[in-house]
Image 1 (cartoon, one colour):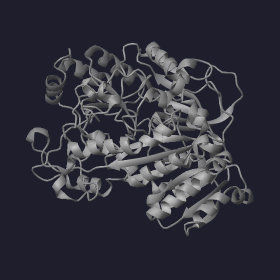
Image 2 (cartoon, one colour):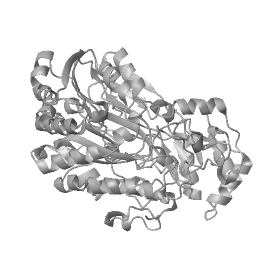
Image 3 (cartoon, helix red, strand yellow):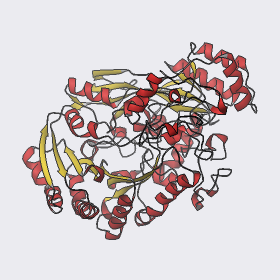
Image 4 (cartoon, one colour):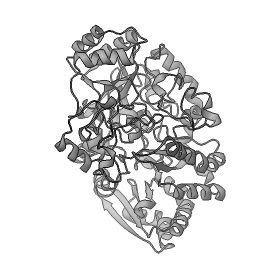
Length: 583
């Protein structure tokens, strides 16, 4: 609702200011706009309706109604995901190196200091233009355009992006958010296959978990979905692995996806499954989004509705209590994962919650004895629930307590292997780093108890399968930060997470929720699969029409689209970040 069609003047301005080094004309833009049905639009920063000035001091007429809604819903996941110019982590709306931004004060969105004169709403890393794509022809036209003009291309879905892969200064974006197909088929057979029909849900690239959870409940089926209602199931979630509280018992998204429909950079609209384009199917099951093409839809198996046993633990969140609780929970973590328990431990909420779709109520209480004991040790309490479905579990415990968005933040994460929970040095270092950060969480979302997986069929790091906890710590900043402030937060992650990395040398890292400067990222994200993934990338995108930060085949940070990533001045990124601003 914040976008407007580009005028001839803005098209010419974009050409002259951003693309002078390339052969691109106003006729090229006009032709692209005509080809996509007039849906080439300006990328407008999310908070622009609150500002009186735009970049360069140009006057902007504030819209009080839109501004009031933005202020009241600044940290609303779904609201942000439905606005093209918004990102869940708004540092990707900014240029971190120059400070160009159009942000409000997330601690108090009504604070006029952020948006009143002389503040300007600057474009930052919000793509200059985007196309609200409707189908494969839009994607084909855009690939042809960027191949001719060299205008850098990004793919944006919900904006739930921790790496800035769907943003970039001077870019053209393909926005998939309006691809909202959602169809339950009780007799689905992947195209070209002769397998027995199964119940499955076909999901457009932009359809979010909120709608999928509702469909599953209304039709008495189970869909393994994530914790954020705004995330698109067919986007980076599944292509990066796709974790869920159900994953310890029922597997990851990559274990349950049956088929993708994708436009590859050669313009071909392909179906990828176990019976055709098998190499592409492998790559899309863990190789990452924004890399091999533009996925328009995917189809996942859905299983009969399950009764979910849940346990909620609550305690007084003091530092001492949190240290004692997390250490106690670590001692029972492997057994809980083996028994199919998945969930979230969140000190900031003074609570933790687990779910189990395979145990009955009596067995669940016996299995979760370590949880009862851990919370009792800090004067806390536990309550058991029996939920009719996974959707009921989500609605009761997860949807009302989503993680913070709307604030710039950087994180360090690690998938902790099952054989490391007896390493007290590791556990102590992990807990200290987490509690020293601005926000931390332990996500028990790995497929540790799930054994019915295709050993050679997915491209995630195999170390996922032996991990029990996905541990996370993060730091944030605000609209009035300096480059030194931002760099300081990145460096805190590196420093505080160092021991965790050193003590888990063979561990995996979830590529969708990771340190922007994760050391040895190719191994951490994909393990032994990187060489195969790179070969698939070269097959389908030899010209690297698609390129994104630390994706398979990434060309490196010397490209101008990455100029807003600051250098941490570390050994690992010093070569990759030539030309970036340094502290």
